[in-house]
Image (cartoon, rainbow, N blue to C red; front, side, top):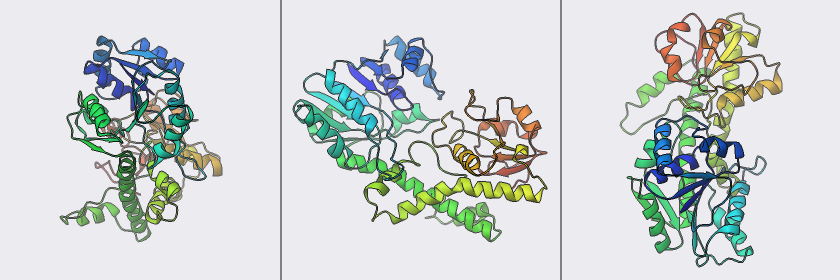
Amino acid sequence: MINVIGLGYIGLPTALMLAKSGLNIVGTDINKSLIRSLKKGELNFEEKGLERLFNIAIKNKIKFSEEYQKTDVYIIAVPTPYLSDSKKIDAKYVISAIESILEVCLFNSIIIIESTISPGTINKYIKPKIQESGFSIGNDIHLVHAPERIIPGNMIYELEYNSRTIGADSIDIAEKVKAIYSTFCKGEIVMTDIKSAEMSKVVENTYRDINIAFANELAIICRQDKLNVYEIIRIANKHPRVNILNPGPGVGGHCISVDPWFLVGDYPDLTKLILTARKINDSMPDFVISRIKYIMGQNNIDSLSQVGLYGLTYKENVDDTRESPTLQLLKILENHFSCDINVYDPYIKENIINNQYHDFEKFIRNIRILVVMVGHNHLLENVNLIKNKIILDTRNVIKEFSTYKL
């Protein structure tokens, strides 16, 4: 039996995929209401293909429990935030999961950590905790880092076809873990040591963050000189070795906006480029606010109550709001202004902020300026409803008529 710990955006699809493959799976989470919902057959987030996968896993008798199971294989997929002051990883959720596992695990157990962690986390935090409990690492307990590598909106496909990394101190243990993931993963499975696996995952997301920051800084430069950044990027990308990304209103999600901070926290004197990229991307919600104020002035609009933000999620066509640029922007407004700006997102069914609409046509009727923060397909399918609005398109997704850009 495999006990999957943490049933969020990563843990639940992983548990379901393993169960679909015929393995004996128990999913565990401390969230009692989540476990109740899963037992009733109710999913807690939307994802393409997830419901079908869930139904197959149920038929294969996957179980859900608040209790850690007595077994010899565990997969940990819990959150790994960073400490706001030091920028170092906050490993408390992983440590808590390890402590609970040690209370029930069998001899010779394998603990696989899928959560993204900073390089050296297992050596610094996890191994000492295991040794303090009287277990012998490499005999009683085997540690593995197999970082997740999937994105909301395409999770099921990427679980199956993306390559995976297995970091372990023992080749025998790495082979055993590889066999587990091979039950559903058709991508290449690379085996390496633990610290290299830790570093490789953080580096992947840091690379993406830096490239996004370059595009965002180009947008700021081009705005200063009244140039069309999208035209500049289009022309530059004609070069066979240039591939500049599009700018946007900020960086969200639990990967790109978080993982680079681990390197900044652990290597503060060596991460000048990485730190600058993080600062640029974190500054984009402020830049969007400056564009909103400019457009309000251009159109003699003096109240934010006539402005609407479209999109609360951090990317298109998902219901994931973690580190959302829109939420970052709203926080800035709340700190500095009387914030009565309007917000709508078709994927967010419950009220999570003030002035949140759930009827798109009513939302559109009540505003003069529409700020496109997320390019959901829903907006593109209803573009005829917004053609008479003043639009700031931070995602450059509206092609039917002229809009303001970043």
